[in-house]
Amino acid sequence: MAIKLNLDRVMLERKVSLTELADRVGITLANLSILKTNKARAIRFSTLDALCRQLSCQPGDIIEFVPGEVEEGEADP
Image (cartoon, rainbow, N blue to C red; front, side, top):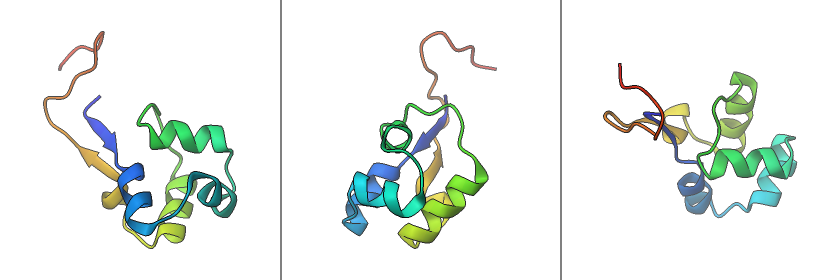
């Protein structure tokens, strides 16, 4: 997938732990970990909104389009 999540970088810059952010955003540690490790297939706007509020950032700080990145098994259009 050409969409990459940079949540780990933003969390590091803000010095926020996974546990602390999960509590502040109101999602499970497991689901936040999936987002942080870039294994998510989707993200709800409400989750993105909560992350941006808690991390004082813009959606573009978390989500990035990386042209040409295709995972194994995906067809490039």
